[in-house]
Length: 225
Image 1: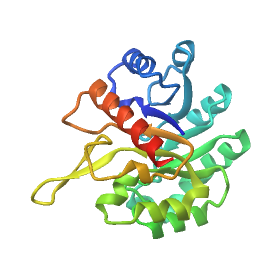
Image 2: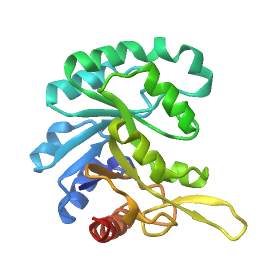
Image 3: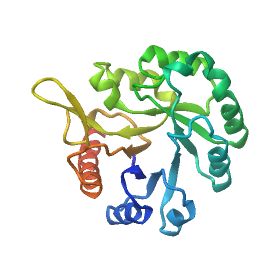
Image 4: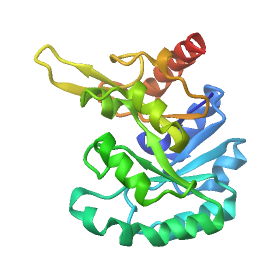
């Protein structure tokens, strides 16, 4: 198990690196551009995060290949793209396979990976072993989908995991929070790969949220091991 975080939440790469070093984190999901800056600090780039650029992945795939980065994390398009999704993504899938890069698509509920049937459809359309998932249990939790069963079913297609949590207000409204402030029992996460904290908790600062999440995950993942 390796815990890191998605750098999007930090306004500068220097601040993200500083927090990683303070927490003795070794790997990042990098949304910033400077791979060499990360490596100069003694950190590994576990994945290039390119969620906004999902229709133009070629430069990111080539960068990952050139830099020896295992994966590019991205999105599987939106419902309006569903009928033409194969044609949109096939060039990126072919290039990534040729260059030895994994493509990891997050199961964000607004995209074409909303339900488990969507996952089955997508992974049947792209059965290549280098195509897989950024598995985020928080999206499944509030959709009332059993994330533990989903983890078991799709384990072989998971590239890495996103760690964020869900909390519910008294009126039933939900919101994203960092692990430790929501309902997910992270001790149940039976997974032995890279776990990237995705901090979207509006009540916590970038540093404070990541620090709290790392502490909680280290405690719970160790307890559940």
